[in-house]
Length: 125
Image (cartoon, rainbow, N blue to C red; front, side, top):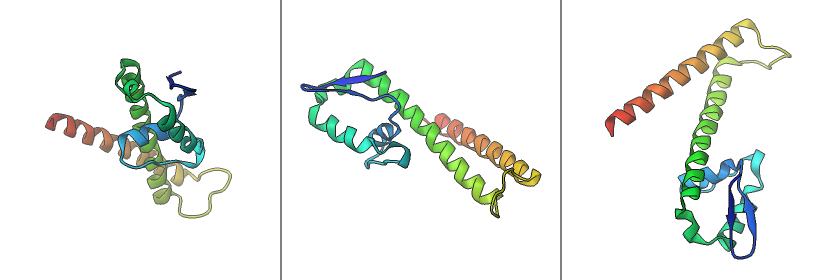
């Protein structure tokens, strides 16, 4: 669990998906499952010593949160894209075999393309 200690308070930052989104983008993205993020980012800006951002512990924390953000975003996109493509009606208690096959194939293709794109970008650097 990572902690940031400011002059007056201590804040726990484990499992804060929005934190990585905030650090990796120019805007704050708060998702319904983590509405506590708004308070935490305001608290951090008020109480955190900004020199702590360059500490090795904070850099490691940032890297881990950035990786979590990428995985969460990929899962979110995959779920949205494949759901829209494969589930055309109102879902019942179970997916039909065609829906299940479509979801599996869609997810597999999405992951393969994501890996291909990442490898391409890495080779360009």
